[in-house]
Image 1 (cartoon, rainbow, N blue to C red):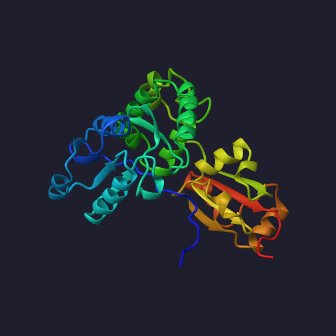
Image 2: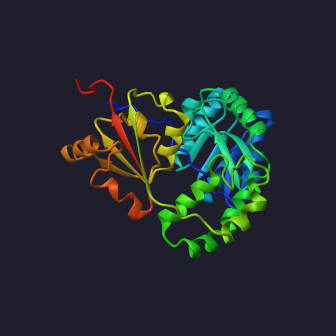
Image 3: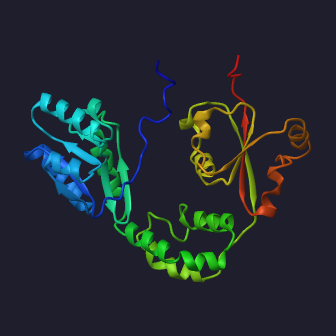
Length: 291
């Protein structure tokens, strides 16, 4: 019996294969791109099934022209403990390969779960025109400056908020600004605005996350804690940071606080200033979803 439909069709992972062997079966224009992909990631291509099984290879690409040969190979390799990708046969795949935008070490992967490689490619091509080549240098600078930031801002929440402020649109390290990487050292060693914690609230009337404003979506993505007043839809909560604390409104006290001020300060989120964190309060004002 099948379970509930998952919220996302695939688990996106970046797998480090440098120095590891990967099996690639097939020849010609279907197999060659997979060989190049493995080699770009530092992997070692092998093309012998028995050797791959004997050496404990765990990843396999199958790119035979013959459909029956692909099906047989997928079954045999899966039985040998490998995860398998069969080119242009998503129903036979344990994983699919996305279209990749490379700003090393920053990688953006666009996938459709095998639905349309062409769609993924053209979204990636649009992004290529938008994102500056300097993104890789900015990522390297942020990695290099971690010790400096930890020393200046030992509290993880405070450090995260400072980085968020720098990386947001118009910030000191705006990723869309080609010169941001050159400012990274000055930003990290200069006077950082630790700021005060902030509590922001807004009403939600639709379960469609596309109805969120740009500002609301950004705040949800940056919030350290999200407090729900009402049955806020899971589709909206999916836009919050995965590690954000989830709070549930405590009802009477929260409502009394709202009656006495323009912005509610519930018992738990009112400590935002003391903890130097961003708390977003979501007020569900849509229809009763349990009716």
